[in-house]
Amino acid sequence: MALAADEPFQRLKRAVIVRTGHHYYADKDDVLWDRVQRRLLATRDRDVSAYLKRLASADDGEAEWAALETEITIGETFFFRYAEQFTALRETILPDIIERKAQDKRIRIWSAGCATGAEPYSIAILLSQMLGEALADWRISILGGDINAAFLETARKGQFGRWALRAVSDADRAQWFTETARNTWTLKPAYRGLVRFERQNLLDLLGPAPPLELTEFDLILCRNVLIYFHHEVVEQLVGALGSRLAADGWLLLGHAEPNPAFGKILDVAQLPGTVAYRPPNPERPAPPGPSFEAFAAPEPEPAQHLHLAETPSPQWRPAPIPTPVPTPAPPAADLVETVRRLADAGDYAAAEAACRAALAVAPEDPALHLHDGLVLRALGRPGPAEAAFKRALYLDRGFVMAHYHLGLLLLDQGRVRAAARSLKTAAQIAGTVAPGARLAHGAGLDADQLRKSVRLLLQSLVGV
Image (cartoon, rainbow, N blue to C red):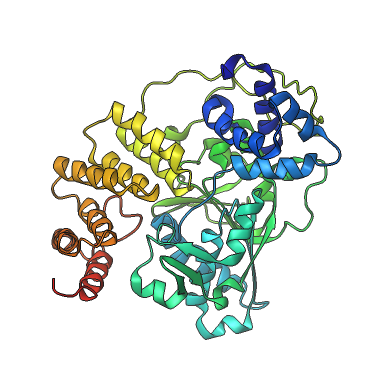
């Protein structure tokens, strides 16, 4: 199927972007088509034209849109993602909120684009730790919102696999979760009870009747969500999110999402390792602003009109879709981040494709081979995953996380002695760095945590 020349598919793509704002698909016809095909099979529509009519139907159009949105949205993440931001939450942001709210003892937090719930649940755990026994005296409201109804159903169950818990130590996992099946852990009710979930579309914030209940939040997290929107829509969304904060509230975005335009509508708070935003307040001491040159938004490109015949015309439309412009190959670190972002979102097929393309550009980057192994392992392909980890080690014999993940993979396969050798090597190398030093590509894991994890794993093995 020649997707670029297929007019019904292009109309569907434009409709998807208008409804969800996911400009991510503007130049990813093959990825979108893979997801659309699943719905064509499910609905038994003969082609995209028939499917467009279904989406426009007054009877089942909305239900089918919800099903399609479930297919096209990327969501699965992991607990305590981005250690720098959780350090800022623990040491600066949440202490500030707790101090300011000490009188009414009420905290409102919104995780926008929460996917399967790891982010709001991480906040629930962190707040529980910080407040301790005093938690019972506080009214804590943590809202998780996402456009994907299937993700929200998963989030409400509070069940997670090893991949989602890879930044959680064994001791913390035992404290916060109950193992309910092999490689499946359920978050304990004390933490789940602090979070509620509801279906949301962030574009509703920009519509003629934005949700009235989404207001006066002490903290909003919208991390790794805005990267899917066109940059003009992103600026509008950040402004809308800022308007939903309490007077001294905090907004956290993803690491790759800062933009110099945000500083024109919100105060910028430079924290160690990250950036936060707050509603404008001329009396608040202004911290030194970060350097945003690397994140400068591109100049707007010539507008294209969005004509969506056979689909309902919405009252509000995002910025026009510019024609994709070829860009030079990014550096290896950016390639790794792209693969990691897709894998963190649970889109392993796209992550594998991105890894193949990245390795063609940077075949000697050990971090890419590590992530290749992680993705292949998640896809249930242990043989190729083992080969990928070994390629990473061939390129860098001192790569702690490659030794560690190779050991975990071998352990899953019952190859106990080989697993123990890899795990011991990882622990020995980690022992040569400062205990609190975070390990490269360790998802926030530090050297001491890895050594403790290895020690517990080795203690559970007999005869090694």
